[in-house]
Image 1 (cartoon, helix red, strand yellow):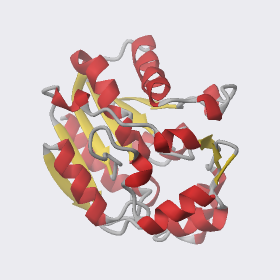
Image 2 (cartoon, helix red, strand yellow):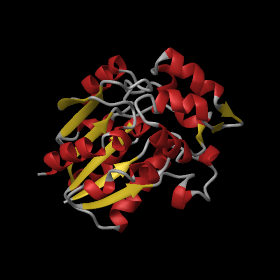
Image 3 (tube, one colour):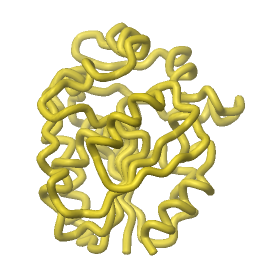
Image 4 (cartoon, helix red, strand yellow):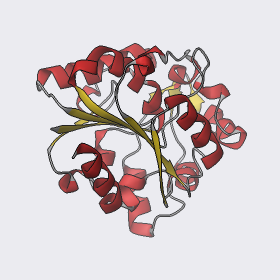
Length: 231
């Protein structure tokens, strides 16, 4: 059994650092194109298919089976494409406050209007670059000073075009057990939007009292949930 963790927008695999030692199984935290070990790729060129391909390539290279796939935040639009390709390797899929808008729509049209304005203001020359103060308000509302400083250090440039690319949810038709984790203190992807996404995902829903970055603020509780799903 193994865990494959896929990060959200504006960050890389490093955001899972506090959680990894608490998981009971092999772990693979994927760097999507344009960051981490894939930082040589121009973020402006990245598509949702490229994001899915990075996850698929890493899983196949490691020859992982019996996988619990965990998609956080913006990875919610990558996960269905991964499910479609790797259904035979998957044990369960966990959507952690994941952005899952209706099929064929764009992410930018579905997010909270206040957050949308901040995101659009953060895109310049095709690059999505979060302002530290804005990121702190959206991502760190329940963090202490040390956690906030660490979180801001993890931010990276991302592809603005991903927010305007049409999503494909056809992979959700696969008969794979799934759980949507709804974070009750999330100011980045608020509870009412999580509710809509959870309805599209189907499967089970569970609630955790946390802001958007639960793997940083309550890694023990996230690990307990993931280890329970895996067992």
